[in-house]
Image (cartoon, rainbow, N blue to C red):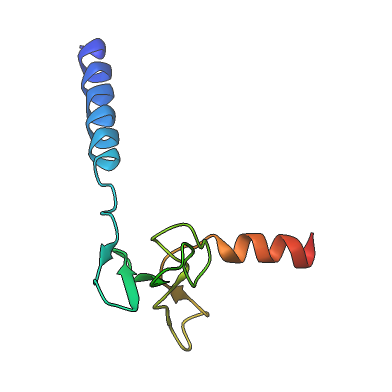
Amino acid sequence: MHRARVAAAATAVLVLCAAGAATALADPVALGGSPLNVYVGERGQLQAFRAGQPNGIYYRPTNTEGDAGLFLAEMGGGGTVNGFDGAAHLEASARVWG
C-alpha cells in the first residue's frame, strides 16, 4: 500500500511539473508600421525598430522583446509593482552598485 501512495505522489508531481513547463510565453507580435515597427510581448513588453536600422530602440537592442512596457504599482499595498521582469535593471544595478 505504501508503494502505491509513493508512486501516485511521484506521478502527480511529474504531471504538475510537465504542465508548468508547457506554459511558454508567445513570441512578440509585430504591429508592422513604417518607418517604425513596434513589437509587443505577451506581458506588455515593447520593442521598436526604425526602418533601415538593425538595432531596436530599447534594451536589448537585438531582441524583439524589449525591456520597455507597462508596469502598475499598488499604492499603499507595500510598494508592489506588477509587470514583467526585464533584464536591463539587473545589468544597470550591477554597474551602479557592483
